[in-house]
Image (cartoon, rainbow, N blue to C red; front, side, top):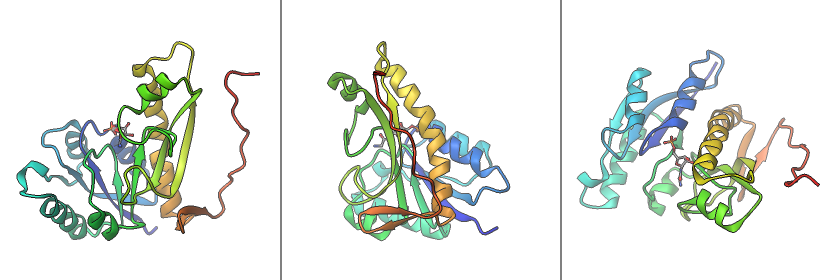
Length: 216
Ligand code: GAR
């Protein structure tokens, strides 16, 4: 089976990276992780990569004079490993339009909200503050505007009456970990591809019951 070559970019704990590592361990999973890049040294995600026997590279943004040279180093590392799809997994540096366009339609991101609501930081706290009944998470192709781009997969997560920021973060992560491997599989199998500003699906069942919260 031909496998899609992934490069995973992280900045921290790497639990989404771990979900991808675990998925890639299955012989029939259609992708492999060729390199893991962290912009922060000594993070837990790098340990996870090393424990899995993967190539783990630190490209510390603080070691570069400007953003362009940092991004040139990222680009070179991804290219050296013949990466076909970049997976941003808790990568917390904003990327310039130049870098994003070099990887256009070949780079996806996971964000802890039901986009286009709650772009940016502190998504869970802001959703709780607003009293929305659904939080969520989204996997999308990356465009130069932050937390924007064609949507591959989303989870709508009902907010419980006793929800706290901590419980919502934990609950959201469980959905993120289910979604990231599933979304990469759709892309690798050619079942999800960018068409204009949306993702077009082939042989994917999109019919599901709606969710109402609280129950009527
Ligand atoms: C995840 O919740 C991810 O959605 C979020 O950072 C966390 C990383 O966790 N990403 C963003 O907020 C990007 N804007 P992880 O390092 O354990 O995968």
